[in-house]
Length: 403
Image 1: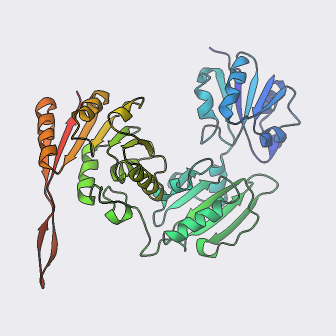
Image 2: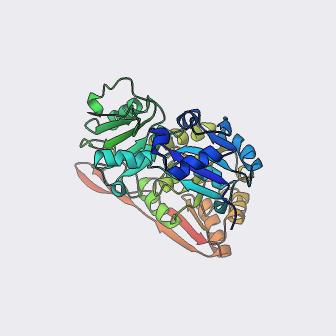
Image 3: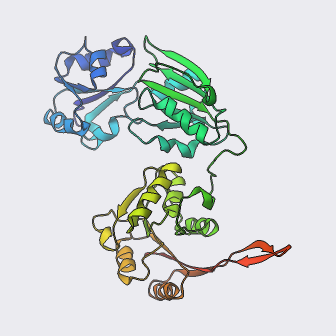
């Protein structure tokens, strides 16, 4: 068995009084104790070895930690180090067999206990060091959300977001400095929010109440076209829903959206599950910027956008599990390089509306198999004083799996 020389110890706002005796002994016997300044102060009366406050970026401390391999080192963390904590970074540098983790209740666990909420029924979101818009996907009528705040202004920014989306009646509870001597819990609604002097260390509980005209993202693919800012370069709602079905996202997969346009395919891919990733490749600056705005507004600020011309823009990108070709079919090099980059078992979906692009998809079908599908939609439209069917341009879709 490897020696467990690195101890990751969760510490709460109650400081050393809340630590188990074994945790206290580990801190007292450590040659090196690493943590944020607040953590080091909380455990200050136990520390005998050298203190190291996290540098910026915090990964800069890893060489110093690894230098002490085999000798006792303690890393102090908030609550549960493996729940939105430092544990994830450390496990990339030190084997789990060489670690001992002694967690404390996380901020989410403490908040749920104070509110009487069943944690398994609550969406937990960290806004600490992350874009505020990441919470948008969880704003469903009747949903309960616990959000770990970035700072003392997070609650006010959330209120602004809720009001803008027609959710001003939502209930907010701001829980500050939980389990510490300065613990405070205050409740309000978004529309009546007037809380002052919020502690920087806080967690926010939200019970979502949506007005009838609130902007709520459905849980199925096929968002309304009007939710996207676009210049006409947009995969329309019904075709988009069928395209997402053909792409068939699975846990943790990466999508390349080539010819990103407004970003609708990549955004809806990311909305299917928090584990999914997407890279959009877009040659035009204005479209890349527009897609970034759409991604933020629709709760997927983690969309990675590469501005450049395909296939040159593919250089250095991680291989995808799925590829959507929304553009670039006029250049055979785009398809060839995308197909070559696709992982074995990966899926490729391409849509065409012109005869020239359709001919290229026919060639892809002949070379690589898969299936060709003609998507034909019609909508009822006014014809004089009555209504009739008005057909949209047909879309030819090629779907294939790389063997």
